[in-house]
Amino acid sequence: MLWENSERRQLERQRRGEGRLPPGQSLTLKWPVLHYGSVPRFDAHTWDFRVFGLVDRPVRLTWEEFNRLPQREVVADMHCVTRWSRLDNRWEGVPFTEVIQLVTPKPEARHAMIHAEQRYTTNLPLDNLLRPTTLFALKHDGGLLPAEHGYPLRLVVPHLYAWKSAKWVRGIELLPGDAAGFWEQNGYHMYGDPWKEQRFDTD
Image 1 (cartoon, rainbow, N blue to C red):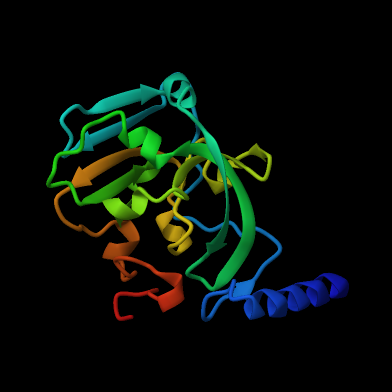
Image 2 (image 1 turned 135 degrees about the horizontal axis):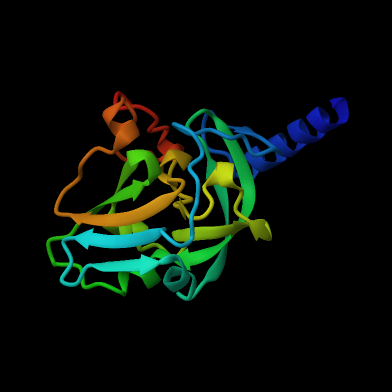
């Protein structure tokens, strides 16, 4: 344990010197489990994924259809608002850009509300979701995404605090303007840039 702590501190100093750790963050070699509510049960026969709102042709995908979409790998850091950072996560899944190609967003669509199990939501600007590092993850570090970390499907938005990377995602709603999601309604920042320490609505 002492050796692990010494290794972590050494790596933390090194990564901080490289500019990898945002202000106020500490490096973790583990992967803490944090979420609201319990881990939902997954049934591949009833699971679906919807894209709706300001689109010309809404879509609904089954689990099998979603898994047939093109996939890629993204290596990215994760920064939690509770002040830990886990670096070099290897995610595999469907890029957001592949999903949004299935619909025609209306010109006035500027924001998105991500819908997940247990009525969890989080808001993001649409142009942020279109970044090449944003994807719907099915795997992590070479294995299936663990249930407590969002299996079967987790949104990954590496440039924002991890609460924006919603677990157990079930859909995307395109909106004309910004609207607060679950944590944003409960005092968290509307955007959540870790490099600006946008943790709470007072930041």
